[in-house]
Amino acid sequence: MVEGAAPTAAPVRVMVVDDHPMWRDAVERDLAAAGFDVVAVAADGQQALARFPAARPQVVVLDLQIPAPNGVEVTAEVLRQDPSARVLILSASGEQSDVLEAVKAGATGYLVKSASREELLDAVRRVARGDTVFTPGLAGLVLGEFRRMAEGGAGPGEPPGQQLTERETEVLKMVAKGWSYKQIAERLVLSHRTVQNHVQNTLRKLQLHNRVELTRYAIEQGLDEDD
Image (tube, rainbow, N blue to C red):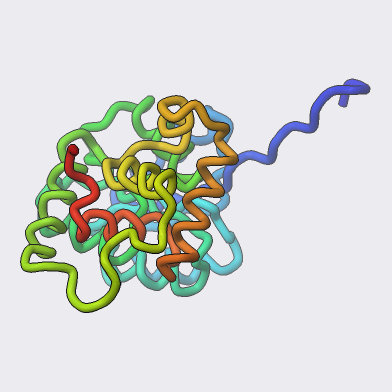
């Protein structure tokens, strides 16, 4: 390393799971060429769960329609084993039921396979940072479905957002709309770290565990709707 140079960040560790060899190899090749560390590949759910503990990927790029256990089951088990892992679904299906099942299992992102190489690489980078990422159109589908499910009120308890500061509520609304930390920081003229701190404080106050749960809470409270 050149004296005085900043240390280079370690590459994001990624695992690719897909039962189509040509597609799996192409995704692995694109990720490696972009500087990601592909620590494991798998052709089905059983292989994925067998290889996950030793590989310890930060991001799992996962097809839904794989030999058992399927992608939804793999997502849930991966996150049970390592809650800090991120799952990005890369599927041929854009069906509402598939998207919702993946999100409910804990997936942080969902892309359809018609996405471009650059869209995939950007999605992996963003998911690794903790952002939620959806193929355009799917985010609105998920928001709409959770809003529909939440009709009739949020149930007993304190009014939504009562424990939150005005700034935390503002950030929460943007999270619900699928904004990245960077976008929120630029819009509110805050540092990336400050936005992260607001999200972490909100999670703690609401006794939630991750951005997926936080987004779901915001949607249930109608905070994703425009004022």
